[in-house]
Length: 172
Image (cartoon, rainbow, N blue to C red; front, top):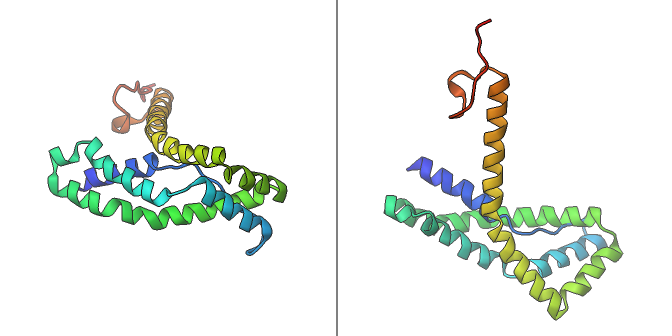
């Protein structure tokens, strides 16, 4: 059961990688304030969307069919446990935006995201960010598999070799 919960937690983290925006300079700087506004405008209702999405993960993975108690626990705890981590991520994103973008660029983003078109795009970006988790996870898994397979073709991985990986012979 622990392995299943751990797998779900990793899946939730990858799947919920929402589009991000960030900060600059000293605390209280104009850039930091603008970056915070950009993040707020570009991630409307992020916590609600995140809680809804995380709540669907166990269902999508069929956890209730395997372990109903684990599914109930996951549905009750996964979202609320992620919220403080998401808040930390958003603060980090604010900092990065403030450092990377000029005051004028940040103000242009704020101006755009305050328009009806900007608000519409921001809402769709959050949803798209949540949907990107699965393709990103597939890509990461495929890459790691290829990397380990390639490494084991060139080196002796012994029993640790991934299934199907050709190991370099240790006999000379």
